[in-house]
Length: 131
Image 1 (cartoon, rainbow, N blue to C red):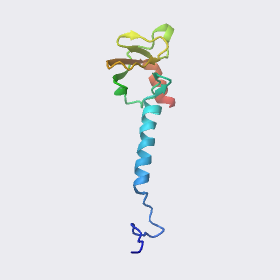
Image 2 (image 1 turned 60 degrees about the vertical axis):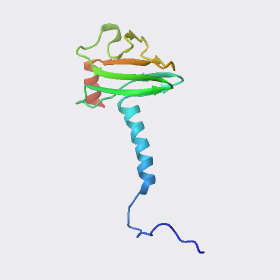
Image 3 (image 1 turned 135 degrees about the horizontal axis):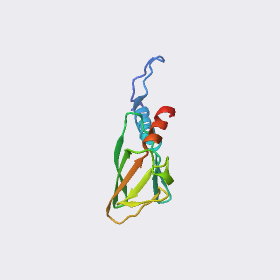
Image 4 (image 1 turned 90 degrees about the horizontal axis):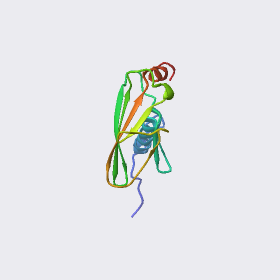
């Protein structure tokens, strides 16, 4: 029995990427959206967000699974220009409790948690104009 290739050779001008391109690029696109657009940062058991939304996006919702817990994250551009002390920063709550530093400590306790992120309207405008 002789060895035969399992592919059909193509001319050098053929620019097909094959499955490697599809699977590799989908992983990069997933990270690009989560990290750059939605601003999701996962570090040492904590979760934080610094969204840079396109100008025509006012909201997004995502679910994040941490062990047996689920974190439902909803971000919304606020109506006002900020709230004084936190002017220009996102307001983050976990199950209705304000997270002063905007960082959520993840717990693996089987619960479903609600995370709300309110982006100041003027901050969102700045990102849209200069992002």
